[in-house]
Length: 342
Image (tube, rainbow, N blue to C red):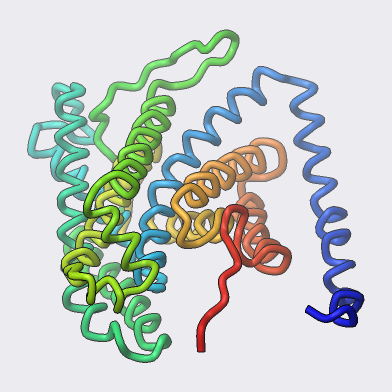
């Protein structure tokens, strides 16, 4: 870099934008701070609930970031795989005699079986979509896979309406809800279970990517797909496994989301999926720790905004974060700037 280039002043937009963002964020932050001071117990409960919700977003965000890290593809059908996971849990619970209207014999064993069924069903769906929708257009111009992803998303939504009907369905109580006291803070066991399950799955994924042969192959493909193929990596198989793992995490997220929501319908994955995408971009798309961090932050922001501002205004705040991140730090909180070779 020359001295003249180093001394060149930054554009006015780059200097003014942070100040404008800070001014816009100040009033909501002050309202949250006022509420926290007025009632610290309620604030602590909202934080716990926000982290629990953020764990669900993080699981879905991990699917986005894994596929992008390996293929550079934004899989917009991922939110619909999340929705299919919730329905898989409903049908698995019904097979054990647990429905939304008749609790049956809820137990941890049934809950684990529903988790397994949802994760397996979504993994199979994700690998099927990769094989027949994305693999044929893998080497096409970048716009083609993007349009394909949008088309697959719409296809899954409409097929789900035909198969499951568009009528919202209650999620079966495979875990009986109860109140747990964390000192002065009272939260439901569902919230704590959601957080614990999400953290356990995230740790398991990190171990798989960092410590296993498949994980090394994933990292090799994300660095250079052609070089990985020349080194003997079965790229098609590893990419299919990546889709399967990401979709399985989305299925687990669908179960956790269903346990905490009153109704599920074929479009119930759209908003959570978009928020999870915001979380992936916030943390740094393609970065697994970044997806975890982004999901937890988005969950807390949404919960605090709903509690102290307005529940209808909370989604606007979440999507505003995406705009700000793209303007101020496009690579995300934990992402790194990379240069493309031409």
